[in-house]
Image (cartoon, rainbow over all chains, first blue to last red):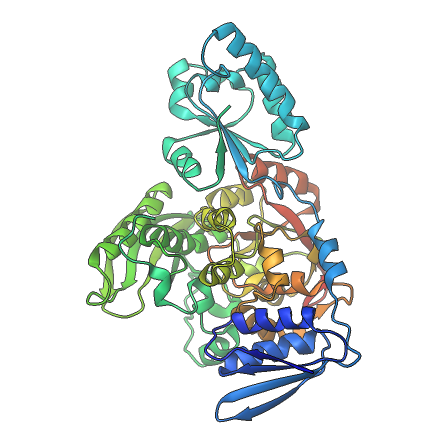
Length: 205
Length: 346
């Protein structure tokens, strides 16, 4: 049995994607023929096969290359390694969302309740499995980073866990608390607008 | 996207992948006459990111240009990314850009001119964020479009950061995730999620200005920005220029979301193979190193992060400053040793 992978008319890296797929799917004892009509793609596929110790032969006829892999006895199974690598952890790997805090209250309605809820919210964030990339505070939310508050302590804790804290500069000036900021990078509206529109998921509690 | 025209349809290889292979370039640059002016502090000898000219004891100018074909569909975003990338060479040398010219090629009869205006607006937006004034430019009618800036930056002559400034024992920190080449190729094939692709665009638009400030604050002497030659290619250039060996840890490299999965599926752009070819036998890869990780380290980056050599005593400080400035992917990815070449370990 020979599996034919026809990559004619395809641009790099599509032929390599198809080759790799075929290698993963092919049963022991099956051969694979990859047909490529582009010298660069052929070169890249060959290099890939060489690097992965997969023996092959190449035939060329009128600019069409046929790469033949005789799969007899070949074990192409890099899966285990791949999983190992995927588990590598580094700051922010799993976080793909931003939290935008728009006031010092959580939700609308009673302000005392809103304040308590916000405190609880910031307190529970460090326990989440997926931390946010960044917390952006604007309007009265900047006061959450004020020295001597419980919320500032929570923000410091989050910052130490690798979460960026961003404060709107205009808002900090408006509330006159520039000298009393415990944590966070003061930023401008251009940056905030960029972040909120960057397509990353934005959570507004 | 609200653009009139999808720029990605014009190119097969975009961004820094469109560079002429380093090995080819080096062979022709060898025969060019060299300046013998003592005020030329950095020229092409050390394969650096920009040229540096000493004006007086307190001021040196950094000159650089960089332009390339589209890496994304939206003209405004392409302008932003190209300008960010052009400015990056100044930051990589520890400087501050302040003047720029637009360098552009645009097919006025093939693509609506509004797209060109959007490209320039994107560039102007980034220049403004970098406190750089764009004072002119030059446009040639050509297909596919290309855009970038020629930039002038300033730096104190004693504080120039170069490829040649690494010391044995320096710890290497990379400030942006790798994989932009993979992601752009995957976008063209329609096999990447919107969220992961947006994250890629976001990082390509991040100026390396804070990395430059952190480097100056910590007295860093050796750094470069990672672009078309990939992490491995640029590491090799630094090793060569600094007369040292570089050990990169393949399991520590920061990656864009989905980049590993895509490479595992075979989405490896041709430029990664070219870069692997370029370093040739100056690269030693340990047997335990994962193939996909190795190829990600070869992936051509567009507007990539800064690779800096920090003295071991100041690594924690460096990381905390970088993370504090929003460069949350900043990680220790290797070290410098007395020797030569690039070694990749697990």
